[in-house]
Length: 203
Image (cartoon, rainbow, N blue to C red; front, side):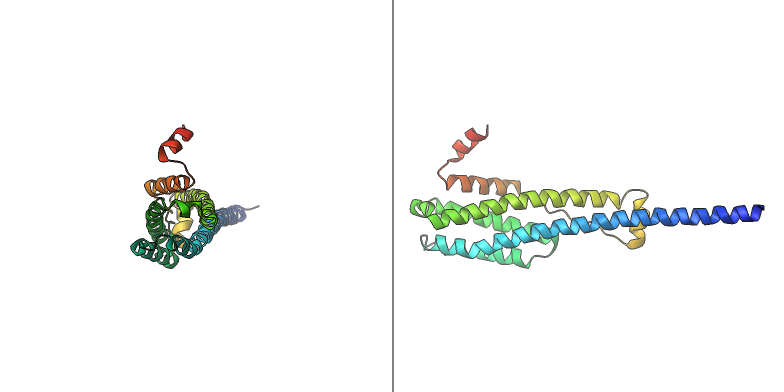
């Protein structure tokens, strides 16, 4: 074969190689993006479930603590903010606001032993506790996918394809560790454990 034919073969080979290489990176980025979006959908499901429990919780507590209107309104506003939040950043802020409001609501509950002993309140508390655990798990799964995707689109060679596709980094869904700790104490305390007992049992 002549030199010209070999040059053509080599050029075509390089073109095919580069095309397959680009397709591989593109598919990897797409899979990572889809996994991250699916993980976010999992968080949204649990956040909606959490918000759906609030009206019954407020109504149950309100049947006993009739003079705590300000706390109930705060919880209701925080619930509305969470429902209207869009994206991880807004949802993070709204979820932290709701967690803080629920912490104050459970502080009110401590003044009503008969409420803490009510079966419907305990059922709601169990459901909330279950949701909190699932949100925590979903958060870890989502943030892990976010970290992998964000690293990928800023690393060579993936960054070349990511820039061509104008892919943007995902935001993390953060947690308020202090507020979450207060909620865990509130859940346990309403079941009859004091914070001191909780600390002892965790050691």
